[in-house]
Length: 316
Image (cartoon, rainbow, N blue to C red; front, top):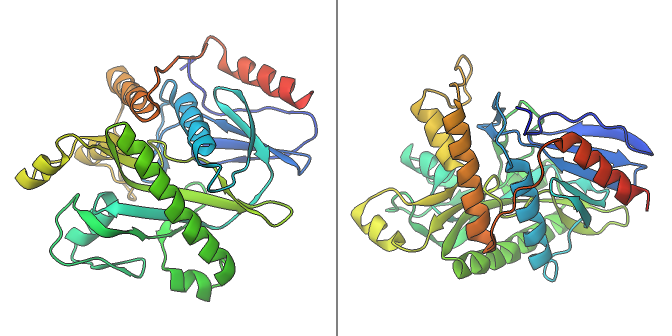
């Protein structure tokens, strides 16, 4: 699709390397700066879908930058500038090899594990007698290992992270405290917009001077799950599915069409109608969570636009 961005292949001044993740591409500039480009690729069950979603990259990049700006007083982050709707530029960091997942409600992966009879998730005990989408007494942190592209992230306990030396005890405590503080703030921001922040994940890195900072995305529909607050209790009481804004609707559509990222399964075809529906849902979340009207960027030549804007920043 010409109006979306899939793979990029830039060669910026002083570029040392490029890392291509599931949906982002990160260019290393002189081991000092990182240029992070949010593509329109769609990933579900750790598998990249064959077709891109219009404006998805812009939506993720702009929500993440707004949320980082709103939380920078409580947790420092890596961002220096947003020179383009799809681009964030910031300090080079060494990422921690864990994703800090925090859950306020029994939903998604946690609910699937609970239904399977498990009461321990990443070493954290889940109370008996809960039903799907019930609120936990307190938010629980359920970390995952950070997988390479094409691999699956895996649940891991705090004890295992420390035992394997993936993160030091001192650093892990900082990550935990930051995770709880960010989730509290994210919950407050969501509530102002009539939403419930159900669960989310945060990624952290260390700058050259050893400072722990928030990296990647935050409170976007790819990294978070939201419910509409209005009618939440009534739906729970009636045992109905919650009205939600997240990527879960994509996962549910894939499951209904026989795909869960397992070996031997075929990715169902997404027709134009489905792609446009997904794009509209992403726009809806953007407007709901930011309280602002989404302004579609010029997509007549996205690759050229990005290059021009990044070069303009780097040449300053």
